[in-house]
Image (cartoon, rainbow, N blue to C red; front, side, top):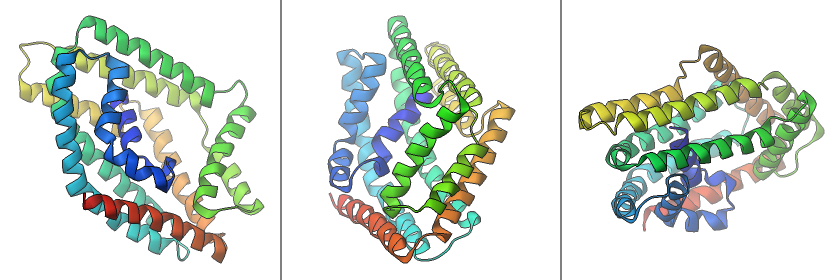
Length: 284
């Protein structure tokens, strides 16, 4: 199911885009998702013909039902950015974001159930090779040879995002990020979970190819795979992620507590820009 997670990120993680690109990315989300999926599966023309209307229907549902939820959440976040917040409030916002992703996962299940049984052995082998390549790229980006190099890479990415939100950040805020990163880095554990999810996804896709398995059973197999993404059977990994989540909430709260009036205003404008984009997109 890891591949589906990356599709969600491609389609929905607008915080990685400038506001000027959000409209273009969202309006073309079915095409972008289809392109990303095809890269992993090398679809036949018949499979593409099934996928296209399904993604268009999903997109229409998302525009009507999910964008209003995004706007409501951004309103809450915008209010949070005007003052100090505690870690509990930050975690509530993160849970809301997670709930949005889970709603999209649920709507994606019928597409997987329909297309999964049509995949050939060759396509599954192609998928496996693409996952192996992606995993190697992940290691190169996140799992450097020394702990110091790993932390430096993560700090650079954390600073980049913090500066998108707040503008220039001060030395105290940089130290807050450094401390957070020093306390929650375990690339080996994360990589083991990536491999587990890859194996899980491949096993599910193979299982739903069995004609003796009913549509209801296939649906449950895929749903269970998504649930294992949210709550890993690897207890060590899940405990690690739960700890990171709590630390992340505390870090964000601390950054906000140490933000200047200028930084808070910058952050509010940043959120307001996205809210304006999402509001406009609802009317299309």
